[in-house]
Amino acid sequence: MPRFYCPAVLSSGLELELPPGAARHVQVLRLQPGDAITLFNNGPDWDGPYTSGSFEARITRMGRSDVQVQVGEHQSGERDAARQVHLAVGMPANDRMDWLVEKAVELGVGSIQPLMSERSVLRLTGERAAKKVAHWQSVAIAASEQCGGNRVPAVHAVTTLVQWLPQWRNQLPEQTTPLLLSLRTESRPCAEFRSSTAPALFLSGPEGGFSAAEEQAAVDAGFVAVGLGPRTLRAETAALAAMAALTLSL
Image (cartoon, rainbow, N blue to C red; front, side, top):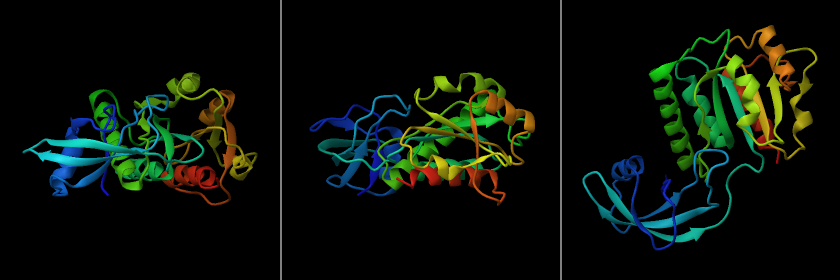
């Protein structure tokens, strides 16, 4: 059954119009009045309003650009990762950030913080940064619809590593474990943190990684250096591998 993100407050028996993005998707799929769909409606922020599960719904009217539905029964049950894992990533260039966002959502990421650092190729500010974040948020919505998750993770505004490090704790739950992906010889194996159920945050660098000074700044801000083994992974692969190491182990 097709699934659509609908940020309205949902309840059984409610009649409503789907948001523009979901309505366009219904039109593309050539669904018709009477067809059944699934709606989920959590807020995009990690601590925002969140309705567990999803709702059945049935299309009641198809307009030229709008779609009306009647909300049916609530469907309980969770499909999201048992452990909340967040990513703060030095943005990879080209379309690799799109790919990273999509796959991270499929793995159940809690939120994504795009960062710029000394070695970043992709640098975004102002209106261009805002448009990119809006695009990545739409990628996250589409990925949530496709993979069956009931929660759309937030993609935060682009900032620099220097600006973000002093205030990262304000974004996340107090008990979050901060981990820095690093090739340092003293890095602890990522596997050491699999048994915990506490939320985790992975800080991962761009192409070429963080500089030594940036890594030290992260350690000074409370991050624990962890590694994924002897291989050198691409920026987007490393972040996803770290996520999978924790979310798929429970």
